[in-house]
Length: 282
Image 1 (cartoon, rainbow, N blue to C red):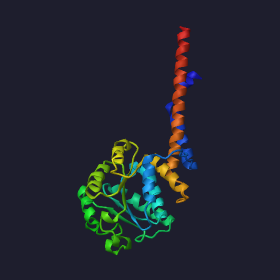
Image 2: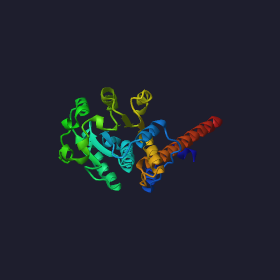
Image 3: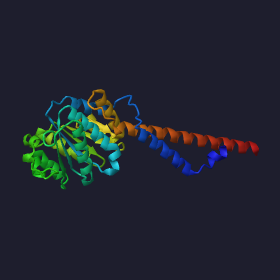
Image 4: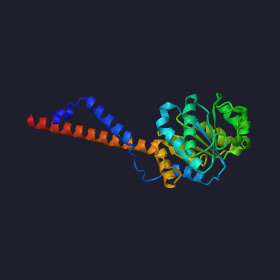
């Protein structure tokens, strides 16, 4: 038995891991969220204070490689905004690849809440330009995006008739997997004093807590955990009956970590027992 553990073919380990990942994914087994981090709670509380009709802008600065962490954040935020009858603008400041990711999710969640394009939400798409675009949008959004992703002039979109620049937007949220947050903090908050929040991947979160402590941002969603926490908050409040991928993803991670720890412990235990037996024999 000990020798079998010590000489186990790694393909068996790969198979075990595949099964452990697939079963929770197929059965949608979610990990319960016992506590909510302050960073997530602060963002939720900020949106809770807004009145119906106020405008939220969400920038999607991530591509398919980070979709597993950040797309559930987008979904949870859209459920919250639409349930509270807030108007939402989506666009892609930095990464072209995320246009379809954002546009399709906007349409899907809007349909879930029976919201209408143009009246309740709109999608601007991607425009190259980087930081100068942010500065220009602070003065006049139409100067950067004269038309939306459907090639409709902003002046013809009902909800955009009362939105000229950042002064008309209650909150900007940047969902990012790259180095976009410092630009938003330095140029959008720093220049225009725009209320700002972030959703980032797990590896980025630690470097952004100082901005939260300094009051430069009002909240942060920390990776997949942040998505699961936000899903828990909106479900508890009755804003969404749809199960979220954040909690499911955390469930998959939890099962996978447990199995990996078990494999490591068993193999190390077998190694030490086998070594002790050899010492006794010699």
